[in-house]
Image (tube, rainbow, N blue to C red; front, side):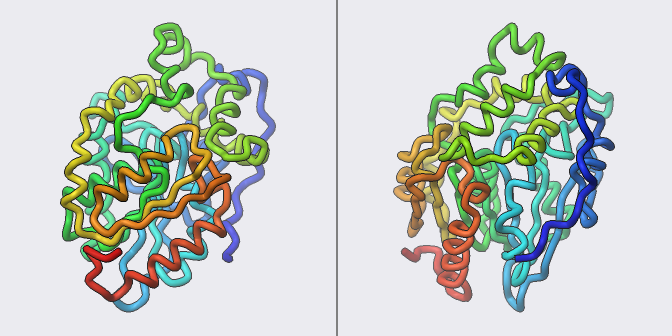
Length: 323
């Protein structure tokens, strides 16, 4: 597996930063967490951070990796380098997270990231990269929702679809996200958000809450403390109405689909994996009994093995109704 490009050593933080009482400038996030191969695109009022690695083999589709709520493109580190040996692999910091941060209007107002905003964003991103051929979309959580919605809207633009603990069906919003709807939190979160809250949230998405190391927890905390991110989350969370999504439209998908799920997912119920498989024609599923909401970060080797098997099984054939 290729090594992750080196980044600058992370500086010690003041108690003000650990309490989330100051926000980190985007340039500082680039210095701390950017890479030698980081790329940027400016559109929709943001400087969008992404990586474009590897090259597709003859006839192979590029792979677009989309992360979930509160995460960043770093969550794919354990699988991206290996996939890039045979594929062009593109991953992006979805707004308002990671180095990208929030989208803004011409007047500088932070955009509300509801589904229409994410549709506009992913369409603009794909167009800006000039991805004219069919691409494989792999999405986790919120990124999974964006991926299957994109496949429905662009049926000729998707070669394969992988949903990893994907959002979409009616559900109770996880407590760490629902907290942003509390009036007192909404008033104070931009001024104070202790590391302890971020740490507890990240541990909750792992099957083994003790697994995330200090560097991982630090990365998540830094990004949540990014300038404008908390304010954008406050605007975003009230729009998370999964009951309004047309999940019955999934029956229209004619694309090879793999559903991967952590059996200990505390954020989205395992039953939702079965709902995706039931609705998407020919979809197959793999469940990891002891893993949580982000299996590709928690056990990347296992996820890689299933991705490679899926890609090999579905390459070069018209398998829209396979399974």
